[in-house]
Image 1 (cartoon, protein in one colour):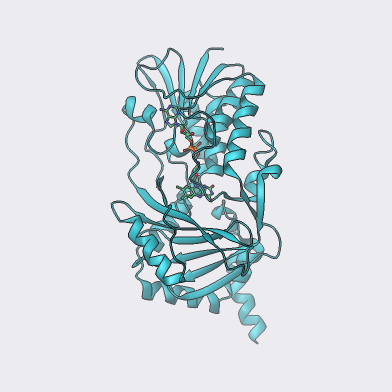
Image 2 (image 1 turned 135 degrees about the vertical axis):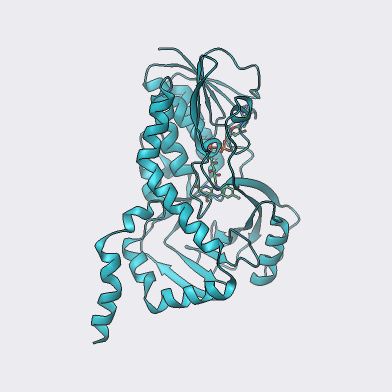
Length: 357
Ligand SMILES: Cc1cc2nc3c(=O)[nH]c(=O)nc-3n(C[C@H](O)[C@H](O)[C@H](O)COP(=O)(O)OP(=O)(O)OC[C@H]3O[C@@H](n4cnc5c(N)ncnc54)[C@H](O)[C@@H]3O)c2cc1C
């Protein structure tokens, strides 16, 4: 088997590296920073089911700093509480999680090279670009651009301690055009407060608006990042006699509804490592396996971001009347919306009518 160069030691890059080694490739993993996981941009909210699916690569449990059992959804002022009454997600320490994944890649035989920014000319061999939303690999090899991004502004704030196991999600296209804002407790004292809007919108203004709405002052130290909201139209190709594959944020393998990219990005990265010398197979297989759920997230995102705040309130109120939260508590799935397309979805409103009789 040949040489594979994985660019970026985020979760996608480390998983791609481990998977490529297990498939028999000689792997080098490059990270532009002196270590993996820093600086961190992520709130670290990841579904338990998604983390369990990563068990072959990392034991996530020691990086889980807080558990979550539900969410309070604020539809432009109308609130709906979804309480699954069990742990459905964890807040991870992303810095230590990413560092251990990269260490696991090294332990399995990858040559890990830190403080090395990869750019043209790239070394001979297959390249897996797992270098995040601003992928240098993608632009160097002229892959088509990701058409839609969200800009985010985020800060760590003191938390009032109320319902620390619930994420708060604020939907309002007047305040956070095309995305949403969030308050994610990391424990009973600290939370991540953030807001996003589709670019070229102004995420700082969105965060300011959340601060006023939630009555929480913004600390001086803010972090700003971008999140891809659509898949890249092409994620793998044979270019100039070599194989180039993109995985994770570089490929736009992100849930458009939430911006969460760890679960799908790593699942796809595992395929990129496995099929490093078969770009067409990689593209076909990740699209077959994960495309329907990623597309469902995108369709839901597009529908929600077209609604004005009056319509959002109406939807929240309708969802409450139909007790949709009860359906979500039982059948909800943070990652796989297609799994919710079950007969119960149709039977749920009928059961409400029956109970009323
Ligand atoms: C505000 C915010 C909150 C988020 N919250 C969540 C959340 O709660 N849950 C969730 O699942 N996702 C969340 N995400 C998304 C999540 O952080 C990303 O989807 C995930 O980190 C993508 O992993 P990746 O490995 O593809 O890319 P990255 O994590 O971006 O890793 C890419 C790596 O490549 C390195 N690199 C880049 N260019 C080069 C180069 N030329 N040479 C060498 N190295 C390079 C970078 O330094 C970096 O280490 C959030 C994102 C943001 C912005």
